[in-house]
Each structure stands twice: as C-alpha cells, then as structure tokens.
Length: 446
Image (cartoon, rainbow, N blue to C red; front, top):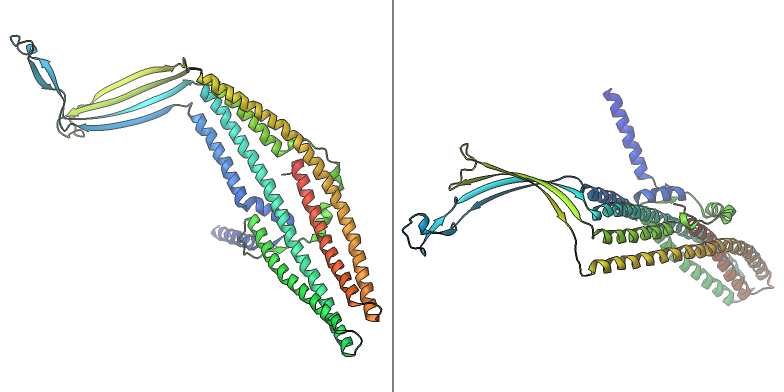
C-alpha cells in the first residue's frame, strides 16, 4: 500500500512541476492563468473573504457575549475615615472624632459577565448593511476579472503584434539587402547612379533601426503579458496562438445581433448596490431613535487580607452576583438626528440619479462600442485591400527600376507606402480584437 502511495505522490509532484514550468499559452489559457494568479484578482478574492468575515462580525454582536475580569489591589496608605467619638465614648464632646481605617490592606477579585442584546434597531440595519457590503465586494471582484481579462487580451495582442512586425521587418530587410546588392553591381557597371545605391542604404539603415526598436518593444510586451498574468516578468513565455487565428475568432458577426440589457452590466450592478447602501443608511439613521435593550448577568468572588495569601487554602472568598436589564432611550438630540436622516435621504436621491444616468450612459456606450466593432471590420477590409495594392505597386516599381524605366525615388516611395500599409493592416486586426473585448464587457461577459 505504501508503494502505491509513494508512486501517486511522485506523479503528483511531476504534474505540479510541469504545471509550474509551463511556458506555452494560448490566449484562453493566458486568461485562465491570469484569473487565478493576477495580484488584483487575489486582492479582490481577499476582499470578498473579508466581507464574509464582516457579516459574521456584525451577526455575532447579537449573540451572547462573555467578558472576564480580575484585579488585585494593595493600599500603600489605607484611607482614613473619621467617626464621631460618641460612638465609642458617650461622654466624648460632640465635635470630637476618632480616625478609623476600614478594610484590609490588600484585596483581590474576579468576575465574569454575560451580556445579551435583546433589541437594537441599529443592529438589525447593520446586518443588512453587512450583506450589502459583501455583495459590493463580489461585484468588485467581477469587475476586476473583466479588467484583468481585457488587460491580458491587450497584452497578448501587443506581444503578437511585435512578433508580426519583426517578421515583416525581417522580410523587408532581406528584400532591400538583395536589391542593394543588385543595384550596387549595376552601379559598378555604370547602369545606375550612386544616389540609387545611397538611397537603398538609407532605407536599409532605417529598417535596421526599426528592427532594433521592435526587438526592445517585443521584450517589453512579453514582460507586460507576464505581469498581468501574475508570472515573474522575466519568465519564459511562448504564445501558441497567432494574430490571424485571434482575428478569425474576434470577427463574430453574431455579437452584433446581441441585445443589450443594462441590468446585466457590472457597472450597473455596482451603481444599484450603491442605491441599496444609501437606502440602508437612511434606515440606520432612523434606527438611532429606537431604544436599545440589553440584559446582563454578573458573577464574581472577592477576597481580603493584610498579607498576600490569596492562593492559600484558608483564604476566604466571598461570592457576589447580579442580574440586570438596561434600556437606553434617545429622547432629544436638538434636531441633529433629523438632520442626519435628511442628509441620508439626499445621498439616496443622488444615488438613484446616478443609477439612472449610468443606465443611459451604458446604452450610449453599447451603441458606440457596437458601431466601433462593426467599423473595425470595414477598417480591416480596407487595410487588407490597401496592403494587396501596395504590394503590387511596390513590385511593379521594382520591376520598372530593374528595367531602367523607373527611378529610385519612385521605388522608395512605393516601399514607404508598403511599410505603412503593413502597419495599418496589423493595427486593424488588433483593433478588431480590442473592440470585441470592449463590447463583451458591456454585455456582461465575465
């Protein structure tokens, strides 16, 4: 049996090591990883747990409370009381007094008190407020999950964008290097001018500078993705999705047919909870006008001695106990309580207005996000068509230059146009992905 136990333990350890060493992530896997490991997610989870403990803390105030107390006293100088001398000597003058010390020099006592809240309006409202606070923390967690998901998608897209830019730059540099070699040979044979060679050198230098910059940006993009995923920023990371696959998944025409329900949006729910919280604040201020009733039972023992012999067997201990009920009734607060209730009502009214405004804002945001998402499709189509045209123009100008019927200026212009449309094409893909994410957040995707 032990043998099987150790085998299972070893297999579990291997699985855990493999999980820790995992460096290849698709976008969905990166999101799942971030939703478990991102520090903001962990803090949001802690806040939910804290809110649950707050509910119990408030609830426990209505349960029996027991307190214990113990004390020891030793008089450095015992207090003196004056008694009429007539008590001891009837013949003494009436203005004559005898100094007397009462009690012992030392005393010790202990007691335990049981308290029970019977009625408190503030306590009842406090219970409702604690539950609302818990709901607010849960909604904040959902909002955090949306933000983390959006941050991962943006960071993943930026990392892929850097990868694609590097691939394009590498291809462009190879083409320019080949052209530079060919033009240099033509220059040696007197077929082209030196400025044609110099122009290509300038183009190649600019491409190399862009390549250096993009490599640094790639490093930063990967570090940012690691950060939002909750991984060490310098840990190895391999992206298993590519920008085209993300584009194909992001182009969801069915999403444009979705009906928007503000009540399912997390920002609406957060505003709605604020209304509930402000309404409870009114009830809380009103509850302060209600009486508070509590009962208590106390039991204890006292001991007295001139010497410290309280723990000896012959020390006498004297019992005491008491039961009581306490009622506190607010009578007059110089209209301060009325002013606080009025303030709470105004805060409640403002929260209702904020909720109404939030609903309108969300509808406007949805229409805008929907239009921008749909517009991103058009931008992509135009960018793709422009890229095809730019490639054809660059190829045509390159042929014309080699045949001697074109010039280096026209070829350079065609190349600059191609490089620009390549960037626009990649940006149009990232735009589709990001616009889809924004629309999903409004629709309440968690």
